[in-house]
Length: 207
Image: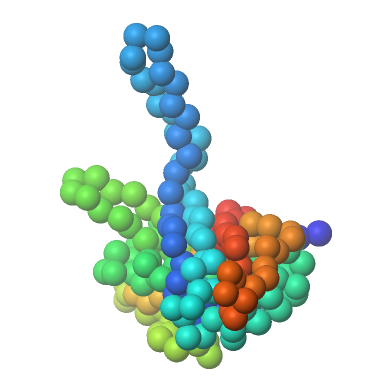
């Protein structure tokens, strides 16, 4: 049975070293004549990050980070339980927080990525809660002139009166899981520091 851990979050002192991002899956078929046929397997981008760089001699918090992630991997039972993860390169609205209507009273949060005149909308399912104990939080501010309630576990806004919500500002997490059940951890080549040879984090679509 899989599940989701809303709190605590994946430690920011580790995710700050993440390398990766949200991307796509494309099938490319090349003919003998050199032509290409490309098909999108996913309609929404999905994230993947490698955070093993957090466990190096250049990180003064390497030993503490090692302990935090080791303990979290145990609590999550490897890949079984998902959690909130902050992409250090993309965790704010950047003035592009929008809503897409589910029905007349429910609206899903999205972030719109624009390269004029084209756009791509990314669903936001884990807005960062107002009561977060982590540094740099700010909660979500909703614009539109109505009254609303926000489910911070789904990113869905319920309109309770007035106008539809038009925009949102704030920070968000990505629902993720560990990519391995068995960790690859030990000491580095010097024998002085903890090392995590491979530590990948993968976004989940159904948190």
